[in-house]
Image: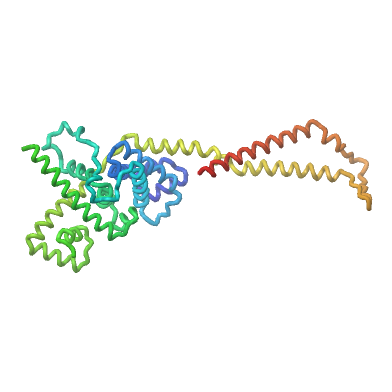
Length: 193
Length: 167
C-alpha cells in the first residue's frame, strides 16, 4: 500500500512525524539521486556521500517544500547544488565545458567487467561508460532529461538556467555523447582485430 | 539556422510547432538524407532512454535514516521539554511569591507620620510573627531553592543562546 502513496503523501506523513515515510521517499529516489551524484563525482564512495548528504538536507528542509514544483525537481536542485559544492571543494573546473584539458578521468570500473568478453558487453555498458566520460554538466542534463522524467523547463529550474539554454546544452551533450559512444565502440573493435 | 540534426532532435523530443512537425515529417518521407539521419537519431534516442541508473549500496537508506535519527536524538533534548511544564512551574512560583508578599504586607502595620494605620483584627485571628517567618529554616531553604532554580534556568537559557549564535 505504502508504495502507492504519492511523494506529497509521504512528505505529509514525514512532517507529521512518521520517519518510515521518509525512508520510503529515500528508497524511491535513491537510485536517481545516486546516479546524478555519480555524474559529478565519478567515484562511487563520493557519490554515496553526496547522495546521503542530499537526503539529509532535504529532510531538514522538508517543511519549506511548498509543492509548487514536483518533489523530484526540488530534490534534484538540492543534488545539483550539493554536487557543485563538492566539485568546488575538489577544485574541479566545471565551467569550461569545451576544455578537453580539464577532462575528468573516469574511475576505472572496468575491473568489474574483466570476466566479460567484449562480445558480452552490452550497449548499455558502453553507454554508461560514455556518459561517465562526459563533463558533469553534460552528463547531468542527459540524465535529467532521459531518466529524471524532467521537462526542459524543469531541468532549467533545477540547474538555474533558461529553458532555451538547457535545450542548446542538451543538443550539444547528445552530440558529445554520440561521439564518445562511437569512439569507444571503434576502440573496442580495433582491440578485437 | 538549425542544422538537420537539431531539427530532427526537436522533432523527436516533440519541441516543434505543428507546422514544423509537418514539414520535418514530409522531409523524412521524401529526403533520403533526412530519413537516414532520423533513423540514426531515433535509435540513439532509444538507447539513451534505456540507460540504466546506478544502484547505491544496500545500506544506503539505512545510513540516511540512521543519520537523521542520530540528529533527531541529539536535538530534541531541548525541544522535548514541554514549554507548558516550564510555564506551569513559573506560574506556581510566581503565585507562591505573590501570596507570600500579599500575606506579609497584609500583616505588617505601616505607620506614617501623617496618620496611623491601625488594623484591629478579631481576637480569634492570631497573626504569625513576621520576624519568625524570615528567620525560620523553612524560609531560608525556600530562598536557597529559588536561587538554585534561578541559576539553573539562566544557565540553560545561556546554553540555548550560544548554539543559535554559532549557527
